[in-house]
Length: 71
Ligand SMILES: [Zn+2]
Image 1: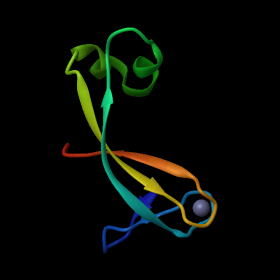
Image 2: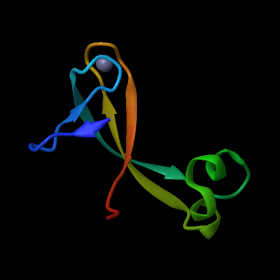
Image 3: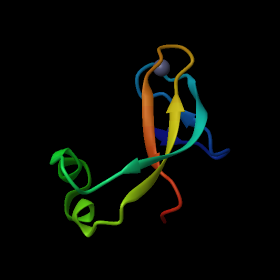
């Protein structure tokens, strides 16, 4: 997954330009250990909801998630 100069996202699977589906709020912390695998110690901060921008490839339907509002 790479962003080009225009801010669009190329599918890492087939190279098509992915379409943003907007920001979704994902719950982190709490019951499952899966978030720790993805986000390491950060998942343990207990921030609650994590905004992720969802991109979908119109060609192969691959889904990519990008952290929103963090930089
Ligand atoms: Zn694709």
